[in-house]
Image (cartoon, rainbow, N blue to C red; front, side):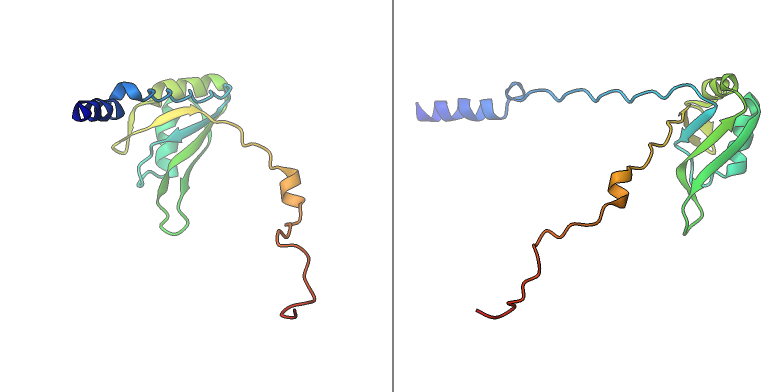
Length: 140
């Protein structure tokens, strides 16, 4: 009798129904349409010129930049493209999102603006958490 109760408890403990299913991930917020694109999934060998040439097929590229590692000089896997107009940027996303560049599938989306720095955090002095210095070091 005790063995049967132990088995049912063991089964219940490792049963899938005993656990709540994980919550689905929250969808990433979409950026407002702008001429600035964020491109991810780039190969380590992708250059700024290669990125510019690939996106120039869809409109006038004002600026293109592949973010590179300071030490190796290779791509970190993402970059930015700026078109002259928002319409050209939309064509660039439509034409390059999910396509191959240098053997890798890349993703193009509207770039999100960089948040402004927090003024209060940058100007505040670090607080000492251990209290004021004591003049009675070692004395009792």
